[in-house]
Image 1 (tube, one colour):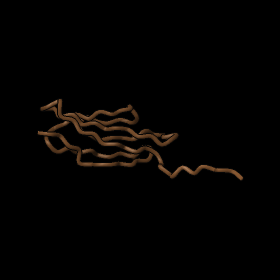
Image 2 (cartoon, one colour):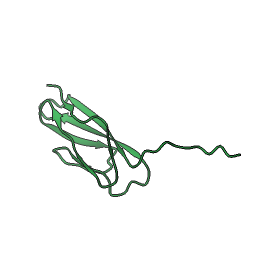
Image 3 (tube, one colour):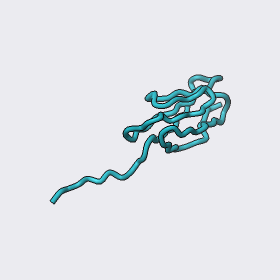
Image 4 (cartoon, one colour):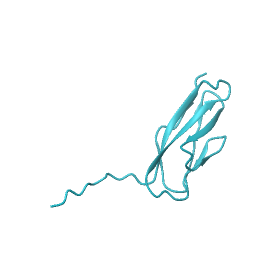
Amino acid sequence: AAISINQTIVSLAAGQTVQFTTSGGQAAFSLSPSLGSITFNGLYTAPASIPSPRTVTVTATSVADPASTASVVVRLGEFRPIRINAGG
């Protein structure tokens, strides 16, 4: 069965957690890049400090079928519109 992550886009501040869940069987979770931590069961904890906004990709790999993967993007830190000061 194809694996899927039930969460879509997640935004977290420093130190917050989110529990990822999957459909399609048991999955092992991994992070790229390795910012924060995630347990085998999908509990993600954001880094204690986030100096600048970053994104992390959480990937779930099916235990029964390692070729089946799903991923979701986690936004870390505050995402504000960037204002460019044109001067004058």
